[in-house]
Length: 138
Image (tube, rainbow, N blue to C red; front, side, top):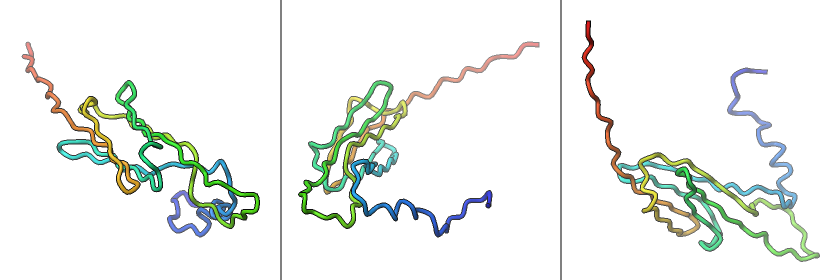
């Protein structure tokens, strides 16, 4: 056993890939999200392939928390259907991100195109704290 992790572990993902052919209602849906900061805004991009905008909610919670949530339904199953592999996730998901102080929470915009949700949050200029020199006596 090594203290240093091996990046080329031949058994990495073995158990999950072996079981991925079985249908399960517990298959987790966790969309991948990128967060980038530009000089003007914070921009979030979430991959939500196959989802419609009315299946996704974007909310701003108290304490400057962005919440992206939704639900992808499972495909209708017929009794005579036989699944050989189920890899597409379904079910509910929630992603939350604590935002920095410089986000203009009243000007957040969201759009969805080609299965990618984009949330843009303009930044406000933060006042630099005033520094006052203190004389040292003695």
